[in-house]
Length: 299
Image (tube, rainbow, N blue to C red; front, side, top):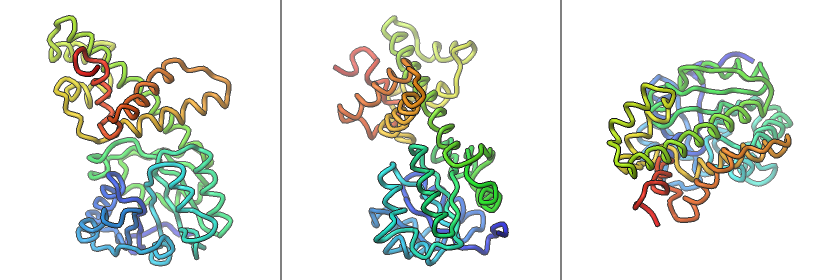
């Protein structure tokens, strides 16, 4: 099939933080965002005005109106629901359409979505995202992609509008596996940084100086850059929620169990994010794990 051009019509399913940022980026770069859909229709009202898109009443309407559909849903159940094999679904009349699935999900769910789309003569690829809202808004996402090479190459013009770097990892499921490992390691780093800063404060060290020391030594990390100051200031505005951190760490742990590996650090980090959800902090940014580790912040 021919490569996509800006004349094609694009739908966005899932207009949360990342989906809405992608829609705005595509609109800014001249792509035609035609339709929006979210399980909470009220979340699309302002966005539809900003990008000039219709708010689709059904998933089937998105497919009918658009040539390409980008999905950015929250979890496995939501993904299987939008690709349902009966009832309202993106699969209705989907022959010839291209689905670009961006959510971090269990790899088997990405495989199933591709299978269902392929069975109806449509294409689906994974385009798992590394980055948060600012990167999505500016087109600076790092995209881990998988699926058929033909579908990937067809999708590249759209991918290049939202991502500054794109890597193709092979058949379906491989991008989701890679993304699970990225987030597993990020979550371990975040939980470890919270413990180091928490201990530093308890020892009476100046945290601004301590962060500078970390940055100049083997303790340096991307997480230190993005979360260190927020942990110190207790500023946990949500870019990547603790609930998502828990979900993604648990996906990685399940993959490890499938191949008979025990990952004690990943399990410990997952336990911290699971605890945040249990204690009502799941909507905080992942940097909020510091609230569990700094002395005097939390019982």
